[in-house]
Image (cartoon, rainbow over all chains, first blue to last red; front, side):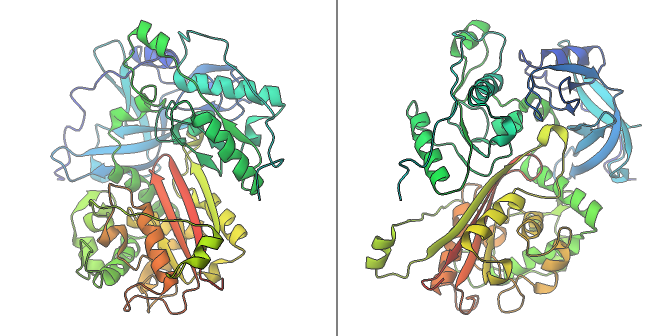
Length: 135
Length: 390
């Protein structure tokens, strides 16, 4: 058994600093929904969410609810610490790739391309942080 | 050469708000950018240079360029308070006059009144950059951000830990001759692989040292150079670029050197085959592998094979690199070693590197810096230097 098995779900996460541009995203996390931004002008989805589409610079953007599913684009397990953690980029089925941590998993069995699903951890302040776990 | 008549101001926009409640600082910068673009009749994709000062949150122009989706190969974040933006016009005009860019964007924006009313935690730079809340919870640190790039490079191209280790091995062969180097012991591939895993797949010896110290460089006009007794080194060409996460279209297998390199080679009028020595920013072994590919010393994905078997060791391989021992063995002052890359390239062109690592007839050398994170957003800068006859 790997020493990294077992509980790698953070017991507590700090509430994100929400601002006027991202409050819609964070409010949805409290309801267990993972959103990306969709551009009505060029049709592209982007992440992290912003008012302006980073592809065509239109401000005609709106939130799009994702299925909360994707695949691991890459990851790295921090080993030189008492409580290792796995940082990763996950490519959502809706297109954008986002940074996260992989939890509820055996760090030694992670693979690029592996299917994962969002696993929100509540901050206790009406928001939740989107971690991911094997699907 | 002067800027007179070489550059024009084509668009301007003044934000109408005097209290920007409900808007973020990055958003305000984007709004004024959009306004100036519309005034000029240009689009975002026409912009190839970005100038900003300390009111932009984040690391220089990196985070704001990402927010706006700018792909720029010229930038400047000179911070001198309210005079910054006037200086930026001058710097942009100089760059345009020199042909380094064609459309430069300069922005200023902020919301101190709204911040005060809404009790936001304010600080110079307008608080954290827009990406912060979407990354900080996941504890990105330097090692795991480079680790993720290495993992993806291995996945796509079959790059191995043994190949990465060769970068460190070469640096250590050079460092043994540098009396100031932090790590002077020659190491083997096995030593690297047997060193503790820090953040997959990077071992301790894949990581640069942490050191104090620093460096300085003096650049002079040709007529001054001609009067000096020390051998002077000619600046032949330069390129710079910002690379970021591109709205979620993430690709960690290349760096901004993909854009800064070709600009430097074009201006210098030389090719990769002309480079006798290269200082390559080596925060981690993977940084060197990706950068060498992006600079065109080998094909994309072939960097692992290129660095293997001592190909970067002076007197042994085809491309001697970091003959001072680099960041991996010599130093990485204040966690940013770019200036030491220039310094060792100057030593090589002057013929003043340690005799054991001096490249014979080193008439053309390259120095490349990487700043920020290979795993998210970075600045890349390439410089090509030459001797008196270059």
